[in-house]
Amino acid sequence: MTDQPTLSPDGLSPDALGRALSDIVTFVDENGWDQPPILFALVPTATLAQTQPDLIDPDDDSELSPIAQESLPIGSEPSGNADLEHILATTTWPAPVTGAALVQEILVLPPEAEADLDTAFLQVPGDPDDPTGGDAVLRASADAHPGARPARLAIGALRDGCTLALMQLRPERGADPAGIELLTHHDLATDLRAALAHTLDHGPDS
Image (cartoon, rainbow, N blue to C red; front, side, top):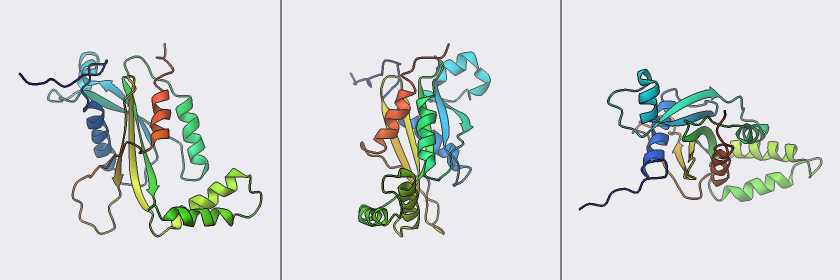
């Protein structure tokens, strides 16, 4: 007798969210880089097969189907993070939505870059308590840092509390594409994962 995978309260396997995020990254990657953030609703594929069968491939064996929402009107300027926080804080989902996902492009810096950014912040002119000026300088310093690496962050959350973050590093210029490699870590984007999970705590829209 073989052990059966433990299902979530929604009847999903432990791999359901990871596969959905992987499918989302593949979908987004087809349109290249330098894209705005995109929100996705995660709906059980079985539910869509019953209610909107035209949207489902008969051979689709996935547990969750991502449904892309409109691209978020968020730029790369320092105010973008505040805009994203506001959008997530005011987002709710209807009852059929089991989870949500967000894809956003970010900059990844090496650990040694922290000292460089601290130095840049200390050199900010004007009011030291003005967060806008400091954020602008830090963002510019991060953009210009020689160790900065663009990446695509995909985070997901389910109503049962499960969250996950995957990261795809942008290939170096001229590198041969070798498929999409996704990285993860339990501490990756924890604040953003919590904010996305909170959109599922507001209760279904009526």
